[in-house]
Length: 120
Image (cartoon, rainbow, N blue to C red; front, side, top):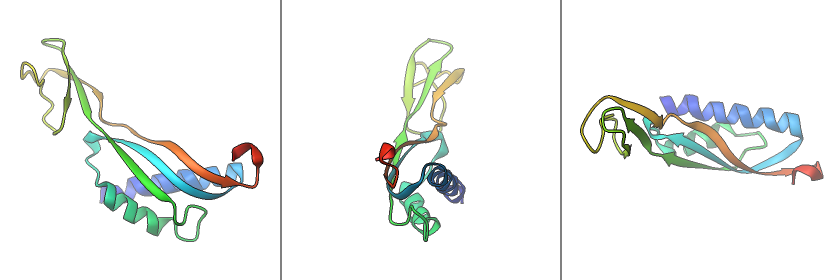
């Protein structure tokens, strides 16, 4: 279950940030995930709810922004977005492509509460 590993990575990072900054409550976490990772956002949210139990992130909303796979064709030079895992150029069909995006996995934004006024 790939989502389990990714979701636990998010939870670990958020817990580490809480310890470092003094954040007392995480309300919302927005993450960006590239299409190559083929994750299920609903499953990630479900796993996160369980992983965050009894932590400052308990009850936080995990929002997953899915990003398209983008490739640049080395044959025709055009850039195209893919909705599938067929890494062929949408214009000429060549498989000689460079992946420009689709592997992303990062925390985009957090909504937090803190005892430290500089973080609110």
